[in-house]
Amino acid sequence: GSVAYTAPANDGSLSTILNAGYKYIGNSVYVFGGGRSAYDVANGRFDCSGFVSWAFRQAGISIGSSTSVLRNQGTKISFSEARPGDLVFFDTYKKDGHVGIYLGGGKFLGSQSSTGVAVANMSSGYYQKTFKGHVRRVANF
Image (tube, rainbow, N blue to C red; front, top):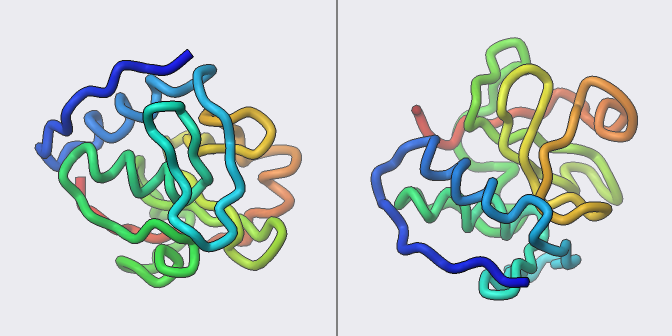
């Protein structure tokens, strides 16, 4: 089922970004973008970077919509400094092949290939193995 689209709040807030994303948990499918800007909001179809870009845009923050752009945006910081709203990158099918929005506590929100939009744990399993410490701050919340 599709989710009713709400106009962006354009308030630059992290809660706007996360609430926009949370609406799609259990209500979306992952699509592989392969470098194209891949998202179809009306049908809850996102690739990882398309989702991140779309969620930030709901708060009026414009960032790239491909991992190749996002991996160079903002400021690179160490994981020990990571705060909710920072971008976390994973070396999946390629270096920095997957990106999500850090939530704190070792969790991140993203469009995951196995589940669609979901909160995933980067402290264990697949995402722990593929996380190599690449964190970027693209906005100050």
